[in-house]
Length: 224
Image 1 (tube, rainbow, N blue to C red):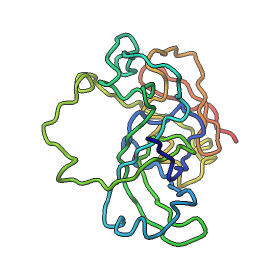
Image 2: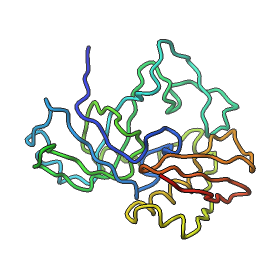
Image 3: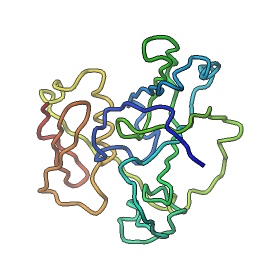
């Protein structure tokens, strides 16, 4: 069976570093989904505006490999323990497919690129190919009491973010909340904890440089 992309998502992440590890963690992130010409048909999204969330089936386009491993090292376990690939959401899979639930902010039916879907909370790289879109159904897709496996035993802490006002002013006003929330999620690989190291992250056409020490992320520089 052959499948083809139906759309591409456009986000503020030009590089993988800094992308939230799951969808919905940073609701302030905004993105738009632009359909490829064969699927650029308003009728194809008729009725979608009645849903608050949608599922995206997409490709880890920068994680393609000719081979695969039955086990991987989940970052949430510090990269020190191996689990079966199908017990994780690792991008290194036999078929490099990802699944994300995002909030549907608006459906723009008309326009030169229409229809366009405006979403929030996406955890995708800019330009990621989308293979399918389905509405999120609360009565079927939300399962109360479900177990989160190893993720339920790993404490998730947010960092305190300190960014001088003069640096924050360099960020477009409508993207400041999202940037601070992304930084609070701790973009670093879980195995890196050097307080002297200066990390760099691309976000919304900007380069952000920061350090992390004892639970505090300090922004050192923001430039274009």
